[in-house]
Structures are given as structure tokens and as C-alpha cells.
Length: 145
Image (cartoon, one colour):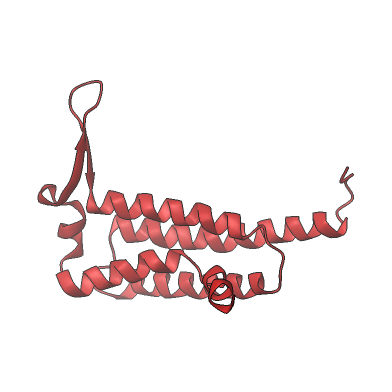
């Protein structure tokens, strides 16, 4: 039970940032690794015949969007641990912003999108929690029925 609570409290977008940092440390040249045609993950056929090419950076972005959606779903919970989740999400955003602005290999479009997703997680997560809590206790001046 404690492990499940810890998992629900930790920000999922931190996983994508840790993966990015790990690959950055192993690879060194993230802009090349993220967008180079040699690192194409898949080439899906399309109606026009050109195909849809997904690179490593595109996959980071897609996984980040999926994790952001899961974070928004987690934000609908009004239990006490959700405040800890919001605090940790803010910490993840601050770390991501710091890395984007100061560290080598992090000033890429992919990392900017991941950093923006962490900001959206903080803002939307708090907003959803507030609206859900207001509805649960019947505040806000609107008819809950």
C-alpha cells in the first residue's frame, strides 16, 4: 500500500526527464541523437505515400504527452498526498527549467516541450484539484446538482 501511495505521489513526467538525462549522459550529443535520420524509430505508411517518420525526439514528446494526461487524471484526487504531488511537480518543473537554461545538451526543442509539459502539469494539476475540491464541498456559487 505504501509503495502504491508513493507511486501515485511522484510526478510521472519526472520519468521522461530522468530518461532524457540518462541518455544525455551516455550519448553526449542530444541534438543529433534526437533528430538525426539515422535514429528514426519508425516510418509509418501514409495516404500520400511519403510516410510518417518518427524520430527519438518525437517519441520523447509522445511519451511525455501520455504521462501528462496521466498526471491530469491523478490531479482529480483531493486526498492529502495530492498536495505532495503538486509540490514535487513544481520541483520537477524548476529542475527542468534550470537544466534547459544552463546545462549543455538540454537546449533542444524536445526538452523545451518536456519542460513546458511539466509547467502545464503544475498549473493544470493545481487548477483541477481546486475545482474538484470546491465541487466536493459544495462551494463556488453554482448548482452542483
